[in-house]
Amino acid sequence: MRRLFGSWIFIVVMLAIDFYVFQSLKIVTASLPARSKFWVHAAYWSFTVVALLLFLIIPTIGFNALPVFVRTYLFAIIMGFFIAKMVAALFFAVDDLRRLFQWGGQTTMALANGKGISAGESIPRSTFLSWLGIGIGAGLFSTLLYGFSNKYNYRIQQVKLRLKSLPNSFKNMKIIHISDIHAGSLEDKNAVKKGIEKLMGLEPDLIFFTGDLVNNTADEMDGWVEVFSQVKAPMGVYSVLGNHDYGDYHPWPDAAAKKANLDRLKSVHQNLGWNLLLNEHRVIERNGESLALIGVENWGAKANFSRYGDLKKAYSGSEPHPFKILLSHDPSHWDAQVCADYGDIDLMLSGHTHGMQFGVEIPGIRWSPVQYVYKQWAGLYQKGRQHLYINRGFGFLGYPGRVGILPEITFIEFS
Image 1: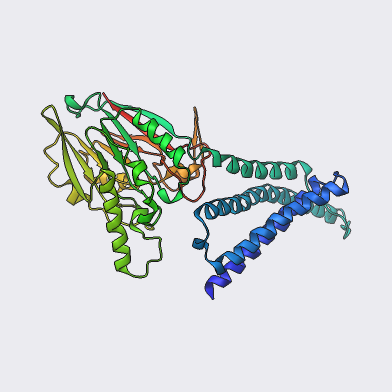
Image 2: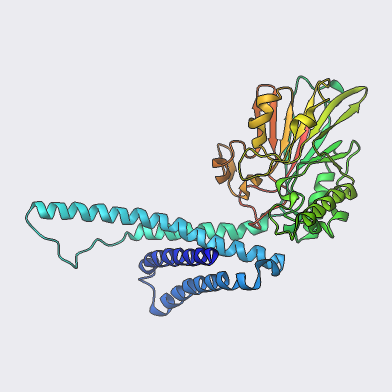
């Protein structure tokens, strides 16, 4: 009953925004011929009606019953259109506030002069602000549609680190860091293979994967093991789990089914030839020198994310090694525990945020909505001797695209 009530509230809100935006649409189309105006208005309301019908029908047939491709793009287009209208509505609200204050000023002056305001007297909407709001809303929606083409546009991020505590034998070593594959969202196998070819063309010595191999279930990797098993390196591939890997967001029939899924996913890592670190560390040796590689299960400082990680357990025994690398999926772990209690962990590698798959990264400007949730959200950060690098994600989740924040292969070179 509560869910049904929530659905109707959402529909009412959507319709209210639609009617509000439509008032400005009428202004900017006022000069069009009647036939053109009709088709513009019909197209606007047709999309709204289709979106609302889908919102009502899909729960009855089960959203998960739809093919992944349909679910992904349908959700993205509907939500993109809704968000674009909300953004446009902000500009119209500014215009309405202007009109309200102007009307209030005119009314006050009229009363002060002993005059009245006629019932039909009103202040028209600003054509400029109407065009601006609709233009920005349409631009945002078009940008989101364009972003569909970027989801396999893998970008190599080169990172050079000069770290004093690094043993000489590991200098000039090449490391690849990837994260957030989200196999359940992938559908273009050839595009993914090209990304892996680009990765392997860098000839890494070591490869690290920092979690979220799947969206929810281990069977999402069916058909992908042969593809990702090509990710290999002479000194090994090491991986950890992310919050999505535990199946916490899937409606399992019982705890045993959930556990069986996680066990199967752990086996997938093994089948890939990857060394899955579960709250443990490994010693990596080269020319008689060593470093400690620490891997923890998911641990997030945000209350809505799971805490399976045990850094104390994973760290124990690594103390004698002069250089330590930590693989931990959620970057909020860095401030919450790593910097606070483990000052000799030199480098932490994370993922999780995806850079929200939307933002701006150009010289002088670096912005994404995710920065209002995560203090560290993409790229390299430093506190004293400690460094954190956050990969922007190899795959995608929810929105099947990338705008400004491209899928990433991190290429780290120690010097």
